[in-house]
Length: 394
Image 1 (tube, helix red, strand yellow):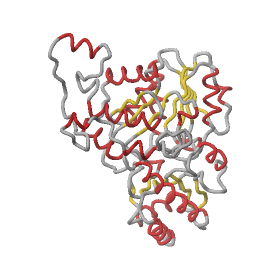
Image 2 (cartoon, one colour; image 1 turned 90 degrees about the vertical axis):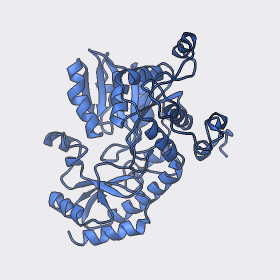
Image 3 (tube, helix red, strand yellow; image 1 turned 30 degrees about the vertical axis):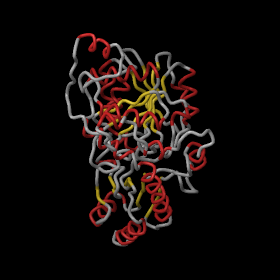
Image 4 (cartoon, helix red, strand yellow; image 1 turned 180 degrees about the vertical axis):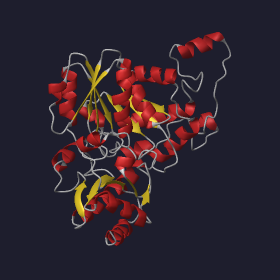
């Protein structure tokens, strides 16, 4: 038990949040595959629009999405979770909920390429300025302007697996009246609880580790009070909703999240330690390594001695070497995604960061020899054996 008698994460995730008597005492909550809901009279309709719990139209809310929203909010500690049809939908909606023409946003140079492209290409179309900085080496306060409304980053950066000082950046943002918005996809709540670092809006591509089975596409935004209400309102307006079936699948996945993440983390550390010693590897990016410049900060911010299931590797053979590596792999699949049950790899320069210019790739530290690995749930010895065999051929 925890010191404050609060139930642990796995206990919360294993609990049934629905009233079984509502569903003929079914153990598992059913999928509410309904686009709309029936009212007996106008008064009942007005009460739901006025805030009484109930359902009107599934673009606004649905029992299946409401169920998973409560489950996620419960383990994260935020007032409310809002689910979306994709991670990008969650991110874009959360950002647009808090900016308007004339505002300014600060974001990390090293982050998911799709978000970088949105910030770089779309925000200026609406008269919103964007400044990209290195959150590891730059002082955020030096870039704050009177019209700065959002400071945006990732808990663990994509694809360089950097760790930034969350509390320091939160304090700087709040000092100047800006919101601190963080994507926690690579970490998950099993590694880092962002509520502990005064993060205003927490984001996920739940397609990844939270979903965990490579069979759903969805996103999540979590916030408190008026911030949550603003995101929920924009979600209904923009229409980027999750389907009831995918909400149900996400609920299923969350039941085993903490167990899966522990395995991801254990395997990732073992793989990183193996690769760090290999002569054909120039550099391994993983905060759990004793040699990592982020090890001390990661130990401070992350829980249960976990460092995540993602690592990136720069190979000595450059582009030709990684191309050969990809072609020779059998167990490790080349997949432009991450967070599934099996180990996969991707080539950021041609997938997640394909929209980057050569200069932006250089600034972001994405070299021609860089591969990003999402470490799965296999027996890690089998993955290491494949690595050994493939590396001997390149």
